[in-house]
Amino acid sequence: MPDRPIRFLIVDDIAENIMALEALLRRDGLVVDTARSATEALELMLQHDYALAFLDVQMPGTDGYELAELMRSTERTRGVPIIFVTAAEMDEARRFRGYEAGAVDYIFKPIDPVVLKSKAEVFFRIGRQAKDLQRQRDEMQDIALHRDRAMAQLKAHADNSPLAFVTLDRNLCVRSWSKGAERMFGRPAGDMLGMTATAAGWLDEQGATLLTGWLDSQQDGVPRFSAEISLDHADIGPICCEVYGSVLSEGLNRQSLSLQVQDITERKQSEEVRALLIGELNHRIKNTLANVQAIARQSLRQSGSLPEFETSFGGRLQALARAHSILSDATWASAPLDQLIDDQISSGTLDGDRLRRDGPPVELAPDTMLRLALTLHELGTNAAKYGALSVPGGIVHIAWRLEGQRLVLTWRETGGPAVTAPSRMGFGMTLIGAAGGGDAAAVSADWNPDGVVWTIRLTDGVTRLAGHAAAAEALIGQPVIRASTLEGARVLLVEDEPLVALDLRYELEDAGATVTGVARSVPEAMAAARNGPIDLALLDGNLKGEPVDEVAALFDSLSVPFCFVSGYGRENLPQGFDHAPLIEKPFRPDTLRTILTALLARGVPDAAE
Image (cartoon, rainbow, N blue to C red):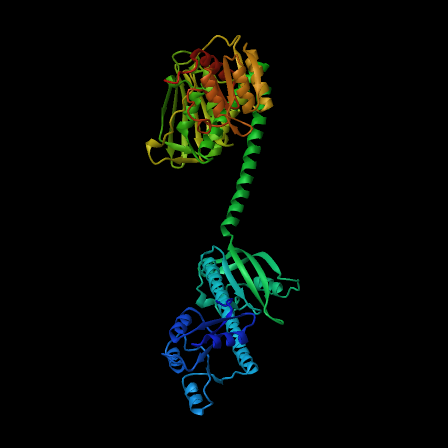
C-alpha cells in the first residue's frame, strides 16, 4: 500500500556482511530485510515489494547471478533494482556478467560507505516517489470512480425525473437535453443538440429575451432565477412551464445556463378550476342566503302571528336544507326527481300512503332541484291545510313526462274538499310559480271543484336516466311516535356551536325537559355523561373537528338513549350507531320533539340486538 515504508533486501550468506550493510543503510522510513540464501530471498520477495536488492555474488548453492536471473524470470520481482556486492578482485568480465544478469550497479569490497549511501539514497528516493505516484494513482482512481458514480446517479436522476434538464450556451444553443426533456416536450435529443433553442422552435422570442437577460446578469456567486414561460411541445404546441435557471461561469466572458423545467399545465388548470369553484361556491352561498332572506321576509309579511311565521318559515327552510343535502350527496351534480319526492315523504310533508306517482326516471340540475323542492313543499303544505291531504280519503297524484327536452309535471288532488280559486296570490303561490325559473307561463293551476291541478313545465336542467334502476332509494324517516310530552326528561346537550346549543336548549325547555348541561368538547361530554343522571342525550356530529365515536360508545354503555344532531349525512357520522336517529341541521321544532319522545319510548337496544 502507498503508506507502507520503503524496503531494501540484503542477501548474503555471511551474517557479519549483512550486519555491516544494514548498519550503513539504516535511516528513517526504511525497512531492511535480510536473507542468508536465494530461497529465503525469493520467499521474502513474494511477500514484500522492494525498492532495491543487494545480492552477494558468491553464495553456496544458488549464487547471486543465478538469483538475479530467477528474479528477472518472475513478473513480481522483475522490476526490483539489483546491486551486486562482491569481495573478488575487480574484473570487467564479472562486471559484464552482473550487468547482463540485470544489475544496475556493481560494488566491490571493501565498501566505501559514502558511495554506498549515495547509491542507496538514489533508490530510496525513487522508491518513495514510486509510492507517492502509486498513492496519487489510487486517489485519482477513487476520484474517477466517485465522479463516474456521481455522473451516473445524476444522469439517472435527470433521466427519471419529472423535470426537464436543459443546458444552453451563451448563444442559447442546446448543449444537453435530458430524457425528461424528451418526454416533456416530445423532442428527441438528436433533434435539439447543437441547435439554438429559438431555431428549433422550442423557445419563442419573449423567452429568449428573458434567458439572455439571465446570462447578462452581473450578480455575485452563482446567479439563480425563476420564471413562468411558454415552451413549445412538438405535438400540442406551447405549454406553460416553470423554469429555474442557474448561470455557470466557464471562464472569461463564457457562461452557460443550466435550466430545470417543470410542466405546470395541470397546476394552472387546477388553479383555474379552483378559482371557478370558489366563485361558484360564493355565488351559491350568496344565492342561498338571498333565498333564505326572501323566504324569511315574505313569510313574515304573510303570517298573521309569530307561531304561524315559525311554522311556515321553518318548513320552507327545512325543504331548502334537505334539497341541499341531496345535491351535496350528488356532489352538486344532477339528482333524481324520485329522491326529491321521497325526501318530501320522509320529512312528513307528503303522506306516502296517499301519494300516487308515475313517470320516467329523470335527474334535475341543482337550480331546478332547489326550486322544485320549495314548490313541492308548498303544494304538500297547502294540500295538508286545505286540500286532499286535509281529509282522510284524499289522494295526491304526481305524474311527469318528457316532451323532447322539456319535463311536464302534473300535481293533481282528488277526494278532498271542494276547491275554489284563492282571492289573492300569497307568498306560497309565488314559491310554487318559481318552479318555472321566472317563466310565468311555465306554471299554471286549474281550480277544479273536485281538486286542484297544477301543471309545471321545466325546459332546462332535466336529464333522462338510462334505466329504471336509477331511481334513488327512499330516505328512511325517523319513527313517528306521537308521545304526549317530554316533561321532566333530563337531557344532556353535546353541541359546540353556541347559537345552535341555545336554540336547542330553548326548544327542549319549552317542551318541558330539563337540560342538565351543555358540553362543547369530547372531554366535557365524557365527564358529563359519567356524572349523570341522564334520560336522553343530543350529540353533535363532531366537536371542534374531533370525532365523537367514544362519546356515542359511552352513551350506549351507560344505556343512555341519544340521537345525532348534525349538518352531515349518516355516512359522515360514527359508524355502528344506526340505532341512533339523526336530526339534520337546521332542525324543525316539531321534528325534534317527535324524534326525542319516540327515542325515550324506545330506549337503547341491547348489544345483542
